[in-house]
Length: 97
Image (cartoon, rainbow, N blue to C red; front, side, top):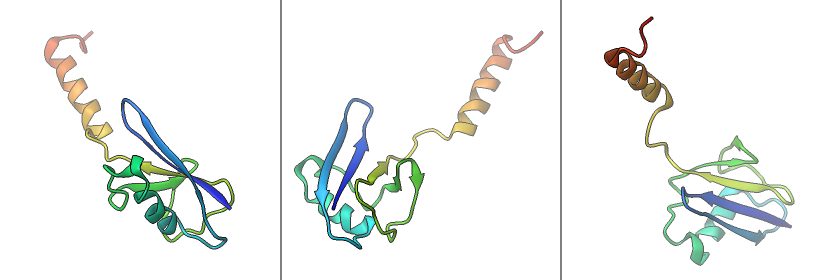
């Protein structure tokens, strides 16, 4: 069966289709993807993973045509970024009425 492994960077996305046996896990697919030239610079074992936007464990068994997504770590925590923007607006007077 075939599955897709995909990784998005800000300026491009990397992907490959893999032929795997029934019963293969996400971890099995990541091991195969790690050997693909386009994933040479990606540490697939350090990325969070999901299938079709839903996070999952590497032990999950894949199904035909699943899209395994590798998630990059966030550089900014969303809550922290909102707090920083609010603080900056308050300091500049834009947040006042």
